[in-house]
Image 1 (cartoon, rainbow, N blue to C red):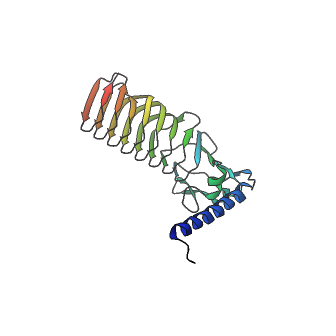
Image 2: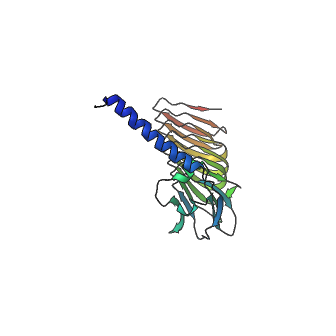
Image 3: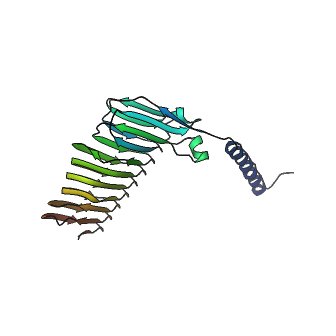
Length: 246
């Protein structure tokens, strides 16, 4: 006797669900433990993270990189220095692995750096600066869903958002250049900047400060709000976004 197609499909779904539930239960029954590895890396002037790993950055010395993760996945996390860039990614290049997915434990990379000129996040992991980072020029780029939070003291700052990640940044900068082509927001109302040039072509919003000069352009749906009463203001809005000051 042939089973109706609907009954057959339901039976397959129930069987698959049972296998998935069994596999999940088996995984959850396994107790994992946290391990910390000192990767003994140095000689880097930039960071590029492409995983779901959170990064905690502190300026100081000596340089160091430590990884905190579940013991069953920690060796799948790659930290290496290439041409002065500290690369952080997983061996399978997926940015997450089954161990992190099932036990929901976040991998954290602790970095101590003497000086940096570039930080890039292209995954879902966040980056936090523990202390105020002092340097001459700094590039910050978010192309994933990870967020950036911290204080800087720089002469020139270049920040770009092409994903959904947000910036929350404070401190001081003589000049800043900001580009938003994604949906992420740029909150820099506490970044005391003399001169700021900002372009918004996406849906992300920006809150900025400029005391001397502001060059602002909107061609997307994102809004720009500025403070600091800059002496020179140039505003161009072609999209549905607004440019307003206080």
